[in-house]
Length: 198
Image (cartoon, rainbow, N blue to C red):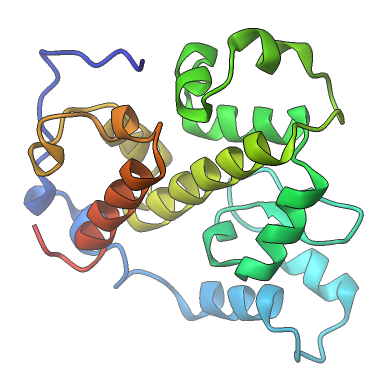
């Protein structure tokens, strides 16, 4: 289970500009880049698309299929592409990218992904996890990418993820993410923050 400090101060969403103005601050350039990446009818060449996705703070990892697994807008990747990635398997290297972005340790990842730490440690580099574990990694990555996009600050979102939340029954979001329904509740809470529904 994730370690949650009982003394952690609750985050005041209303007083934080990074929360209340998250969507308002999205620029036309960011939207254009998003459209370039995911609009299959775009005439933009593959080379230009690859160049366009170099913006942002996250690591971008490409599969042999040329589908993008991980970047800050990966939550918006079409479901069909995510299914393809999951079925091909997500690698240890890609899990490490999620770990680095989220700041989660292996104890927490083991709990969230419902696998042993030994299994997580046993994979190396390009070695891939099975379909069930790959799906869990994708779901976790989805939440992290969505949350960091809404909060517009990685550190603030990662702190929120580990801080008790009254809207989630007094539990930290990460504590609920070991089940599909828990992940769904966390995404709904992020959505409420995105649209200013506190």
